[in-house]
Length: 261
Image (cartoon, rainbow, N blue to C red; front, side, top):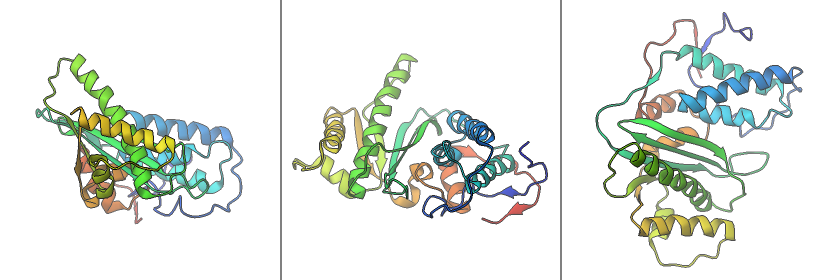
């Protein structure tokens, strides 16, 4: 399929510099094939593979006018999936529910919008995750974290209701890990912000749910921020490390010639 029968395996889904460089390659001629492949990648990313979610999201932004570079990047994700086709999410018997929230500030070179990444774990494995381009331009990394936290908090509220409806008993607030200490400190302070209305409403929303003991924010070092996997393309070592934190285990790796990335 897609001429990849004898292709080399890829060790990471996407080149780390893919979103930070200007694409000057020629337009890709077969838009239908591109849409078909990206649609398939999005399906896999949503249902079972959080490690390719940000790659699929980035490629999905190009469906109106894909280039040859975009097509090659999409095929690289497919090669990565083939080389890790035995990977699977694994769960245990511990009913621990917690989340991670992160943002890649101004990472999109065309719009300078940030990317939100969040993931929630239950019983040792990921049960909900998202990688989305934020709807507004933020003026600082802290603001981009507010926007990401707002989305993660909304997801936490929905998941709490869902788990409760399923008969699970949730004790205490849901912990959401955050790697921006300034963001956490401001949420817990009584200071009044002078931010734009759309940023301030998310900040107040998160603060209100913290006060109501629905969620609890805790600091997490960037090195172990699982949601970083959902904000930008990462190298091989980091992808493997963070995938393991999500309960995504590699299984057997495909044997064809491997590409160093």
